[in-house]
Image 1 (tube, rainbow, N blue to C red):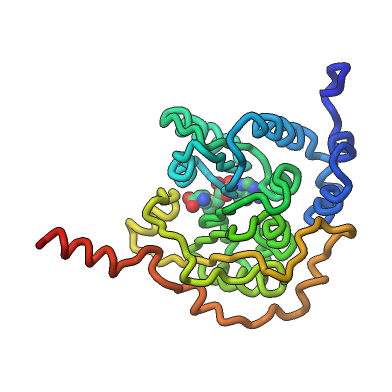
Image 2 (cartoon, helix red, strand yellow):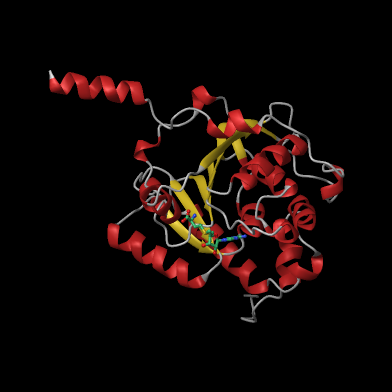
Length: 278
Ligand SMILES: C[S@@+](CC[C@H](N)C(=O)[O-])C[C@H]1O[C@@H](n2cnc3c(N)ncnc32)[C@H](O)[C@@H]1O
């Protein structure tokens, strides 16, 4: 709202953002899209004030749906994990779940995650960005609608702290392979060494992950850290897809990265079970 109580227009919100953030947004969106995003920007900026009063924001989940995964990470009251979901119905369901369980470490925002991450999250501030089972957009001609493209991967990489990581899971292996190639092309992310994959026993499965597990649908992981040579300063000129991706994406050894090790130490679990039987 303006001081006179009039709702602010999208261009006024945009003008109020720091110049480098506007440049980054111009990398991610056609300005004709941004100009219609006044209400969404307003919600995002409100959350920015709400976040100031909470434990530090350390993780973001993109596409939280009804918050099944967020409910697990949100149990830690010492930090805030922000779930970003653009469907209002899902956000209401996730907020109800958070309230029901009294999860003080979780918060929801209804917005396009690409817009929100850029506007809300400072550089080098996150330990984790989770993108779990993103919409696959199966058809090749729709592949560009997928949330993770090369410019958004760079946006995410700028928000990761040293030691932070992007955690992607999908049952669409083509998506995982593509992101592996895009990460290489982005020059901003590289695969997280298998030895540093997290112990996922504390993670609650997302809705899609639970479905995959109960119906034996195979899925894979693509876990990434910021490339040490990547400069996290926000861009001074809008970035273009063609600055990074030519006619062909780099060919990478995706297979070994995506299959990776088990998400937790199976041998240690087996040793524990054997000890208990003794
Ligand atoms: C296929 S569902 C997966 C949901 C959940 N992560 C899971 O594993 O069950 C993808 C979710 O991401 C949301 N979504 C897609 N693109 C988004 C975007 N750009 N910003 C915010 N949410 C998005 C959709 O509304 C949907 O709830």
